[in-house]
Amino acid sequence: MPKLRTLGSRVAMAPSRQPATQRTADRRTTGRALQERRLRIWSRDPHCAACGRLVAMHEFELDHVVALTNGGADVDDNCQVLCIGLDGCHHRKTQADLGRARGP
Ligand SMILES: [Zn+2]
Image (tube, rainbow, N blue to C red; front, side, top):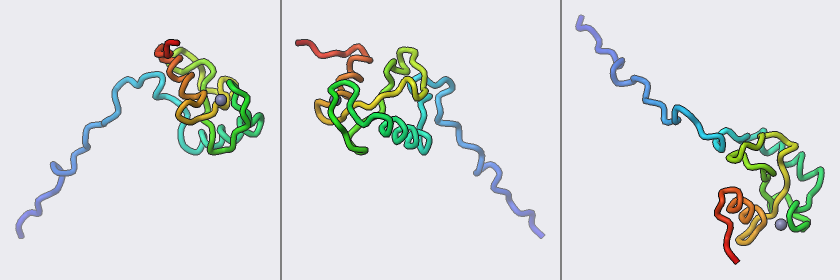
């Protein structure tokens, strides 16, 4: 009986696509935990922390008061509701956090 060829060499583990060292900004809460945090923080105060507008569940982003990239912690106490949109507060703050604030 001929020896069966194995698939060993063809099913070798693919190299990981994850970078060896993740940037701080990539280590943020995601998935179900993030959705639960969104609900928790929005339920506490459903107003945009910057402009004060009352926002619905689909009208805000959870923002890190001190951005992760600037050393902020990924915890509820460092999160706030910011409105979204073309000129929403979240967009403006993100630009500012990244040092790309718009001029006058
Ligand atoms: Zn706002």
